[in-house]
Each structure stands twice: as C-alpha cells, then as structure tokens.
Length: 402
Image: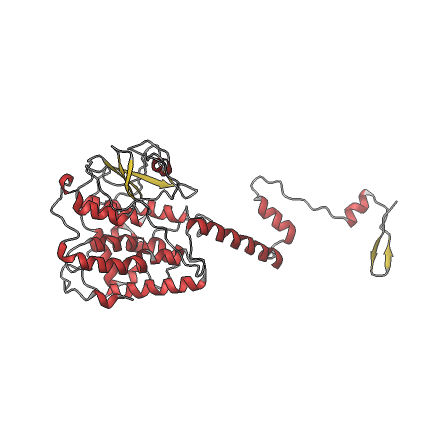
C-alpha cells in the first residue's frame, strides 16, 4: 500500500514505486570512495556543499570549544577566579643547601626559567661539575626523555656539537619522564614536575626547583667546583639594584608574557599587555646592561624572555604591540648577550619553537610551527651591535616602577 503525506490541505499519493520512478523522483546521493578524500570534507560537502556551516552548528561548536578550552587552560595555567588572570604556582623546593659534589641539573630547552640556569652554569664553568639531562616536551605537555640525543639541524658558529644542548636521555636516573624523577625522592611527590630542577644524586633528593635560587647558588655557592670562580654575576655593591630589577622584570616581562598568553578574559589580557609593553618601553631607554656596564643575574633573567619574544610570545601569546626588533636598544642588548661566549650554545631556537607551537594545544590546536623570523636567525643575532661604547651611567631604577 502506498503511503500518503499531507502538504497544506492537499493529500498527495506518490506514484507506484519502480526502478524508473526511483531514478526520476529520488536521485541517489553517493559519497566518494576515493581513499584520498578527507571523510570530514566529504561529509560537509554532502550536508551543505560549499556554503558555510549553519549558524546553529557554528555556535554549538564555539560553545563546546570554549568550554573545553577553559577546562584545558585551568590545568595548563591556573587563573585567578575573579579576574581570569594567570596565576603562576609557586615552586615547592626553595633555598638550596647542599655540600655534595654529586649534583645533576634537569632542564627543558623551551623553558625560559630553565634557560637561566643553563646560561649561569656555562658562564661559571660548571658544565663538568654539574651534568645536565635535557627533557623534551611530550604531546601531553609533560617533560619526557628521549632514548638518544637527536642531531640539531643548525649548530651556532663556533659551537662544538658536544657543547650544543639537545634533548636526550635521563643521564642520572634513567627515567622516562621527569615525573618519575620527582617520584624517586623519599616520600614521593604529587605536585607539578617542573624544570629547572637540581637533583642530589647521593641522597636521591630534590635540592631546588626554583630557577632564581638555582642561579644564585651557581653564581656564588659552588665556586669550589667552578672553573670560573672569579666571575660574580651578583657582586655585593649591585645586589640591591639587582633585586630592584627583579621586582620589575619578573611580574611585568618574564611572567608578563605568560599573563598575556594565558589570560582567560579580555580584561586580564588588557592589563597584562599594557604592563608588559610599558615596562619594555622603559627598559629600552636604559644603559648597556641593567646595572651599568657589568652583566648581572638581572640581565640573564631578562635575556631568556627577550630571545623568545619574536619567536614565540609576539605571535602565540598575543604580545603583538611591538616586535623585539622594533626596540633598537633592547634588540641590540639581546644580541650583545647572545654573543657572549657560551651563551649562543644554550639557545636552541628550533627546540624553543617546538616546545610552544607543537605542545600548547589550547593556544595552537593545529600544532603548526611558523618559520623562524629572519631577525631571530643566528646570522642576524651575531651581527655587530655597536654597544661597547654605550654610556654606563645607571638610571634610577625607581623611575621604572609601575
């Protein structure tokens, strides 16, 4: 029995069902079986052709993605519930004290905080005394160790392959992940497994995982095993000034770029980006180094953010008001420090970009890594900076407090 359907007030009886009428009245829709056809593309072509998806689908997808994004960001970058601003968790292992010579440093190359320790370790001549294991960022965001060292595609000029830092195995404990290393300590550990981390191999204990504490220790607390004990990056006459700079640089620049990138509200982003660029504008007008004509720990801390600025933060973290190359003094300052012997070998630019663009899924879902900006290439960073003759007159740091 044929069925009937009601359209308006007219009762319509469909014609008898035959092969001919099927071809005439009911055109068959088929999907391509070409194995090279993307199933999602085929489905969307079937549903709405070349038009944009319906508004309802777009709004539903946006709502779902927004909810998922906030959930992922809450784990990746905890925020202040009232403002949506990024709130960096405090390091749990502070104030290192140890008399052992058997120390081991754990780092990740993308991390600017770990980069500080690598620079001071190199400048103080602690490479032999303090071996390092370099973790790579896993797809889930955790720090993981590779079974073998990979060969870098570009090695900075005058850098030995053995000195150039690349991800590799855990040389101290043979663990697969940094979390496993943290769990080796007495009593275990259930917090965040962060880099840098200084490990006591004799006691199987964490000495410290706060970057500034570690660089202070490397600078003056291990001169008895250092091959360059005469270098002091925090001389007593400059300690107060270094601390003043730290109070400016850390919240507004070092952590400021993260406050921009990890902001979960427009208001939190606006505050962070204004404080970031106001501080960069002020610092750009400063002298050769922050505390005069002497490199200090304050400069090391600023450098590791600046070297990542145009590579990562300008694009991925939405720090778009200016590029570093648009700051004549700061860009030269960055080149100046990069060209200090041993510093360039700590700057694996490819690993830095991979660690952000390929891993921070909530900020870059496609995991596509952009090309290295020309201003950030090694050949550009090693060009003459002509800063040797700059005035060493130190401006009052109080002028720079926001």
